[in-house]
Length: 610
Image 1 (cartoon, rainbow, N blue to C red):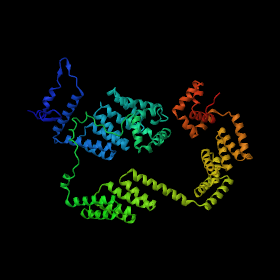
Image 2 (image 1 turned 180 degrees about the horizontal axis):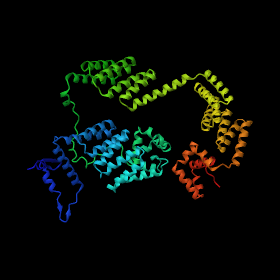
Image 3 (image 1 turned 60 degrees about the horizontal axis):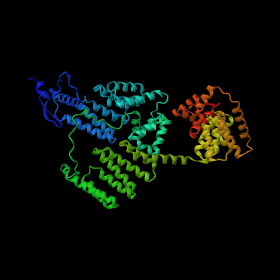
Image 4 (image 1 turned 90 degrees about the vertical axis):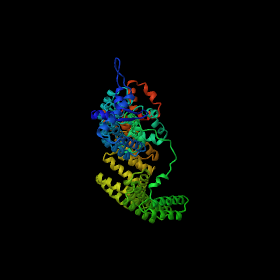
């Protein structure tokens, strides 16, 4: 008997079927009378498993290798589900080392890389998945297309969806992905998945996002990304954005595929759950560590009761019994933090970090010690030092709580520095220098002096008015408007704020708004000659208006408000409908939001109603 025949008769364990010989199992796939027997999904899985086993036997690997691969995959899936992408990637990579021909492992690792934001690596693994299993459209091609979409390679993503549908023509996931990609390519100027016409209908129909729609902050986030797609990259860390993208793109970026076809047979059903019994686990724990854990438990109970002295005694005993464990030292530091002895708290945290480094403690524990030092400085309102240690903690392990605390400290510190910089006397000096430069016609230099004066005294409305005059001279009308609005907010009765705002609007040829602002100035002072002349000037300009259409379009599209209106697909459809059917205008004007947008387009001369 040859070696191959001997291997083929090796007994193979099959779930629910006892023991059988591969030589016998191959005879089951015989032909029916009149042609080959139609193969079911179950028989395909069985044949795949037999091929895998023969491959392991030929390579001479131990019988438990396949089980080890399955175990690593399960660990990776659990880590990915809990959001620990680094741990998931580690487990999948170890499994791939043992079984480099397993397409599901590459698919799952691709999902982990995509969730982590490493889209090039996600693409590499997706390509490998397709290479190993070209007919597997469910996760192979969809993973590859999703990675290409995130890399803004939209044409390639479309071709990938089409290629996947050649293998699985009825796959709904691939069909939906192709449909969305074609829609995005049709909106090439926008390239924003959040701008699809049926956005909220699609989010409402998917259980992953249906619950999120009840949160106003989530709707605000969607509208922000809809209007400003450039901010998508900065928002990808928000898990809600990743979930929403998965729904809109037709892929599940947050989960790993545990497909029966890839890893048959599945592991045996787990035994009935029992209450955890730590006692058997203590057999391998040294006696000193057992006693240290008991002392820690007693210390924790005392800490919860605010009995800090007793807690310190127990933690101190635990530290003596097991000096290699930094947790007992950080627990002592927590007690001193609650007592308000922040110097002692920091001293113990530094000591704990040294012990942790020496004994290769988990980086999460190191990060926790650094965060506690940061919290102690925060309590003492030493925000600069707090930020320093928060950043050290985030470098070890990034957690939302520490990140939020760090951002809060940075905000307070920035405000403190701003307030410390205020000096009205120095602001007056800068204002006078700005006035001199303005009179000489050196507007850029005058603007710099006024900007410095505003930093020194941000509550002086006249400084904003003066800088607005510089911006108008430099033809920076949007910046001039912004300064005028701040000037009016600080001092609503200051006439110059209104006249300079109106002058900027007049220069932008937005005569309707300019007249409104001149009118407000006249309400404050009916004898204001500048406002009266400006109103008459705008009125005549509006009447005799005969601009070049290209100039009107260019000037209008420089207005951010007009850009937002024209980038809205719904408004573009309304404008097209109005052009074909003028009678539709009356219906649309009943909606106050649409009426306001149409009025804006009329004011800038972009549309006209005759």
